[in-house]
Image (cartoon, rainbow, N blue to C red; front, side, top):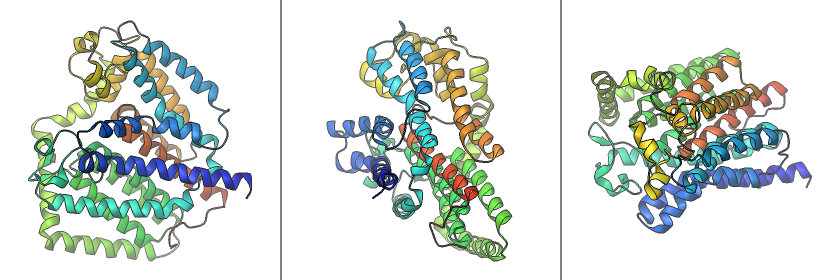
Length: 418
């Protein structure tokens, strides 16, 4: 076995472990060992998955090591901020703020080793399990044991209309939505691999429905945008009539299902009620323009260096408390303002610069990169959501790998070809 082949095999099993741990540890936490010390350890283990990945992943780590070490040095200084409540807040702050970049830069430096083609059927298996479980959860009463969360119990499950918001195997809705983001990138990449157009439309249909029953309006919007990108590119590169016929067939089937299936109709009605709620309480302004405004018109007293790394991380606050200086700020929710609260504009602009540099290194078309980078920087929790760290990083790695393979001439279909 050659060295490169051995490294690909090691990376294959490492990615499988990270995916399975991220996908299925929530099911253990909420159904098998809820409320136990082991459940907390499983959650804490998820925080360290990106670090485990980086240090165990084969390949070189020299090209971007100076950048990561320099960023780490700044994070250490911000973790030792005199306003921080404890060293534990700072420690977890360092772990979380570096996680996404550890995976992202490892991929860019070692993209040739990533065995994505070999992993396709693993991803298909996870997709089938999550979709089947999600449909079962949504059809079950919202007080059913299967709809419980990992810690809060059944009565605190979030609702969409008359149904429980679907979580799949994950502990909470946010983990499920992070996985759905990965799925959208995965399907997009399958188009680049010239996967059967019928496969693509079936996957897109189930993915869109999964987003709807999750109750997340942002996830549905992103899924629709990525679906447009995916279908547009598929039609652009195809010299066959098959994608058009597949699109027509799936459209007719989806219309018939929507008009005849009460389950699908109820799911749409429940989701549409959340859309109406967003207009009624003017939530959309706060979740869109308001997110950017919270950074531009930052209302905190410490805009330059913040109040200490990890100060807004929920896990640290629940165990070791919340700093007076963070409490002084008042309510906070979106990630950009939380980054400024913790590390000031120093941290915000440094993270943004590193993120843009990482996207610059991707081989995806510029407009796609610009859209995804803007969305991640302002509208996702890529630091404080431990599921996003894994799924966004690996999803982008897969999509970029597909672009690299396609335009290097070495790509073979991983699923049935068109």
